[in-house]
Image (cartoon, rainbow, N blue to C red; front, side, top):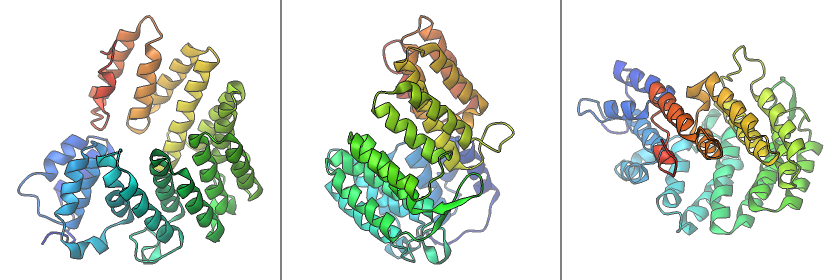
Length: 344
């Protein structure tokens, strides 16, 4: 019956491989076949495909079609999606999503059991807690109620008693990462002074100066203050730290890969401000070439296509970038990025 566990099948193994390779359309075609048995796993895979392809109405319909009895067995990832969906469907109407996200964040960050998290008893991991707070930050700022997210992040930091294991294997109080998240919330909201205070708190709580998180924080603060040269150095070091310990410069952890992408994107933007456009483009292209599947995300593509507009060979570069996307079948990239003046 729908919602029940399903035994491993060759088809679902293929789907998972397609999704690892970001061939999401291909995965969805298999999941939409009539001979695929209905199960909770199939539903979750379909939801991940819809979200990756930004097909939010289809995701909403998939969730609406689930039996109510099965909603309690959903992983936290899908529960977060279910409360964020009203915002994704209509960014102009954020009140419902904001209220539900606040309630979910309180439960997730209080250590409540049975919420579909990856820890024992269905509790949320540290990174799952930070993930829901990042989404809350985004929605709260979009709603013009950034203070709502500030309260939840501060509360999460106050009740956090665990430790965080850094890139070098050392530990620090996990609340340092909540203060870091608060600082980034303030940066996005334009409150540089509050961001500086939060980042100072993160360091005083034991966030190592050379960690990826601390270097990203330093870069964001310097960039917000207009010191793009110092910011560039911090972002370059953050990228190295995120990819540290790898032979090919490609981290195995999705979290580390996201941090490297953030660092490289910000580094390229800083180079634009320091009049090093070609170095910025060259660096971002080299970064993406290390592993297009891991690094060539929509944010990288968006930055590259924007930077190309300042170069005389813009059309050729955009065409080459589109060929790379097609060659690797990166089906989760929004090709509307190319639908602008000068596009390939």
